[in-house]
Image 1: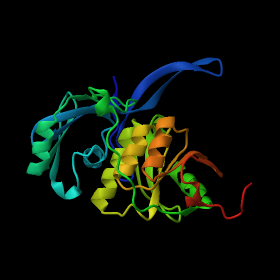
Image 2 (image 1 turned 180 degrees about the vertical axis):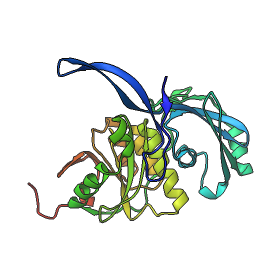
Image 3 (image 1 turned 180 degrees about the horizontal axis):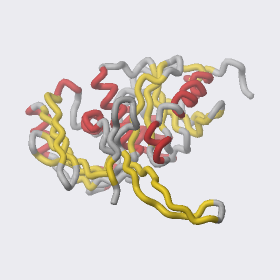
Length: 281
């Protein structure tokens, strides 16, 4: 039986559980307790009407709901959201969003059922026309010094408590032009982590023209789409991009970096936005 680990003052963060395990280590059997990341159904309701059920880590869910609504184009602006309420049941967590009449009318006209999964970016799309959504083109994009990436990467390693505890979460971070981390959000799902970051940026009213986003995952089409929807002009991923993500980044005027690790990175679009201080290595 798993027990939820509650966070106290300055204690471990919520979003994980302690379970009893057995295994082999160094050729010897062992019994111990391990920490595993939480993954629960999260229902998103707009004005009392269910729109989507996602699997997510139950923390920063207000950020997640807002970021999802913005990155999916359900909300044109944060001003169209009036309130967010969370309610928990044995089945999961419901996030209720009170939105403007315009948004609600639009949702009713195109209502669809989404079966959310942590590793799938197009779950719930019913046709090829729905699969690739219209892309927002970034109008203002920042330039950064190459060394700033190393600064941000080093800092992010220390700002992922769920990953340090469980080894099973992704992070998305908003970084200033100096490499300082302004916001970090974690989730078992990479899409969810980025949605949480987008929601946190909107709630904090932080501009997306004076920084960049860093993600601890590959850069798929949807990660680029979500970043562009938020006006983020530079997205750095620690793993590889997909071919569709590269094409979308070029179309969105977004600088896409892959394999960002230590002092190494690969620019797949708009490399001129990275200033290399010391020249090629």
